[in-house]
Image (cartoon, rainbow, N blue to C red; front, side):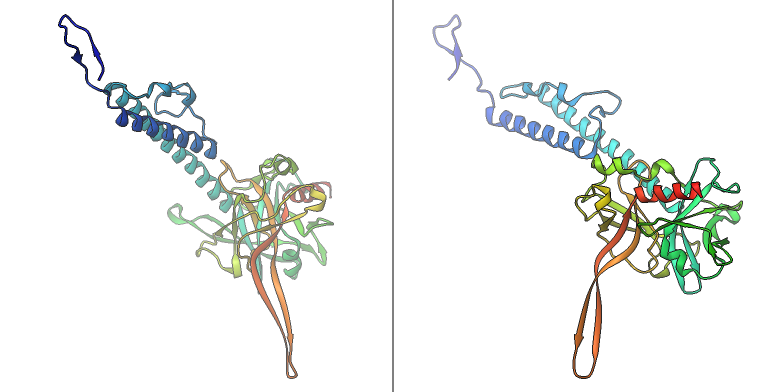
Length: 342
């Protein structure tokens, strides 16, 4: 028993500090701090997110949370932890809003190409007021075989635009893709990427990708693009549109190839999502960025082929593996550069 000597010869008993309770609080606060710091690191959030106040988490004197501290100090620390977590929630909410806008921008830049039974996906890239040829300032990018499958001199580009009361409606435009039998697009010599300069009519709504939103090789060498990263794919699987206005369907997956460098030996990568006919030409867009960043272009699916033979029949069975094959984005930039030089 702790005590001090007073005027009386008998020791005066002092209350024993509630050590178990305080030690439990200290452990709770330490765990909260560690989880908070981990959340900041995982989300890339600045630590100065306390609502209305700039606070550096590491500057907090957590060592004061020790056995025997007074109730008022416990409540201050508890309120501080609560405030930090509220700030984190606010910060994450802002991050989600930015990501939602990036996804919507990617959808606004993606369209369907079709003619007869042929169909594919394409996306627009803006050259920021730089002419390609004959006043064309936008590039339509897709898989090369999509243009090959569209027979004749023209095809239909399914776009969208404001209708009555400002509601976005379907707007189909005729797109010239050949001069007689001569293709007007350029094709990359090593991968299945094609690009076509286009004129866009008035009254259509779109959000073209900028050139700097097409990831170059530095994104892979600096590991901003890497195996396991989540991606979104706006596309038209099996010629299906999201609605009558012609919006693409948003698919989600992840990069399944490692390593992605050097580029010369990793021209394509696997994306872990179920690919269907009609997806070819779709942009592979990083998920979780403040703006849409294209890291690839879908060109095919990976499948397992099995053949069996009996005395009466021969069978070939193709089994999809749930993997899409995509060309890495630096080759998209190279294809656009070829078009500019044409």
